[in-house]
Image (tube, rainbow, N blue to C red):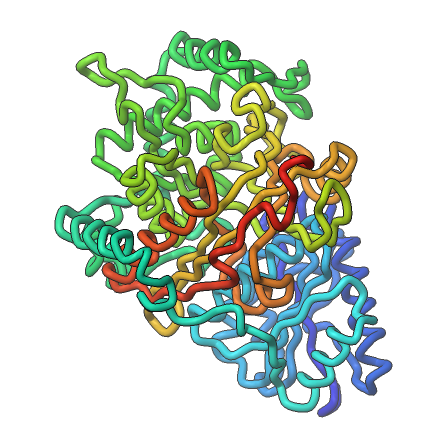
Length: 549
C-alpha cells in the first residue's frame, strides 16, 4: 500500500443468504469505482478480502468490522462502497476513530438497494458526529460524480447544493397561517404536559444507529420509551386464538383485500402465514393498550424472523384507523376509530414523527394514516402529463391500505422474499393513490433533534411504468410514485439524514400547507429544530393535470 492508495470497505447484511445473492451487484460497483479512480491516477485496495467459502466480500458483523479496521491505516483515505442494504453497526466502530477522509458512495439503483443503505449510513455518521463526504451515480461516468470524486481527492470534501432547506420561521409561512401556527404550538405544549409513551420492541434494528433517539432528547418533549421485548410480543401472539385471527382475515376479505396464496411454506404465502400475522396484529394492539403506548415499533428483522412470520401485514393495519376491531376487556374495540401509529423497524425518529402527525391531522379532522417509506430510488418520467423526476418510495411494512388506489380493494398480500424472511408472512401491497402529501424526517445532529419538512404530490403512472419500477425494486412491497416540490434528486440525497421518509396525505394543497404549518410549529414547541424544504405552496395540478390521474 502506498500513500496514494485508497482503502475500500463494504458493509453488508447480517443474513448470509442476502449477502450471497447481493454480492454480484456489490462486486460490479467496486469494479466501477476502482476503474474510475484508476483513470484519475489513484489506486483502490480492499480493506478486507472476499471469502470464497461464504460467497461474498461483505463485513457481516460488528466484531468482524472491528477486526477489519484494526488493520486499516487510520489516516488513509477511505471509501465505504454501498450497493446493498447494509448494517451501519458493522462499520460504525471503526469509522468513529478513523482520521483520514471518509467517502460514502453508492450506485444509483433500486435493486437491493444501495441508496437506502447509503442514506442510513450517512444519517448514522451525522448523528455520531463523524465527518464524511458522499456521492452517488449509475456508473460514475457523469460529470456530477466525476467532479465530486475530484473534489474529494483534492480536499477530502464534496460540496452539495442544499439551498432547498431553510430555517422555519412564522414569517416564512405567512400571516394567513398564523392560527395554524398557534394551534400547532398549543398541541406541542399539550403533549409535553400530558406526556406519552413510545412502545419499543427492542432497539437497533438492522444496525440503524440513526434510528435510536437518546432518552435525554425525548424526555424534555414529554416522550418516554416503554422498552418491550419481541419475546413478549411472540408470547402474546400465542394467546390469540386462531378464531380471532380468522375473524380479522374475514374482515379483510370482506373489504376486498386479496391474498396470493400457495401451498409451499418455503416459497409461497400460505393461509397459515396470514393467520399468524393477524395474531401478531391483535397481540400488538393489546400490548399497546396494556402499556398505554401512543405509538409502537416492532423490530422484527433479527430474532423474530427465525421464530414467526414477518410483521408487515400487522404494521400496515396498525397505521390505519379503519382496521379489524380488537375488543378490549369491556367488549369495546381498543383504540376505537383510531390508528395505533407504528414505526417500522423501530425507527424511533419515525415514531416521533408519526405521533406528531397523528395529533395534527386528527386535530384538523383529516385521516391521520401515515407511514414511513424507504427512499428507494427514482428516475425521470415523461408520460400521463408528468415530465420530471419521480421517486420510488417503498416499505415492506407500515403502509396503510388507505394510501392505496382503491383502499383495501386495491390491496394484495404477497409473501415476503425468502432470502430475508425464512418463515414468510404477508405484505400489504398496493399503489399509492394520486394526491397531495406532506413529507418529513426527524433526525439527530449535534446532539439535537431536527426535522426536515416539505410538500409533495403522488402521481399516477401507467401500469407499465409501475410494473417496471416494481421489477427494478421489490415487487412484493407497496409503492408510492412521489414528486417532492422544489427539491431535486441530488438536493434530497445531500441533505436527507435517513433511509426513511415520513408521508401523510391531505385532501388538497391548502389543507396540506395548514397541516405542515401546525406540524412544524408543534415540533418547534417541543424543542425540535425545524427546516422547511422546497416549494411549500406548490400543488399537484402543476405536476400532473387532473385528466391524467
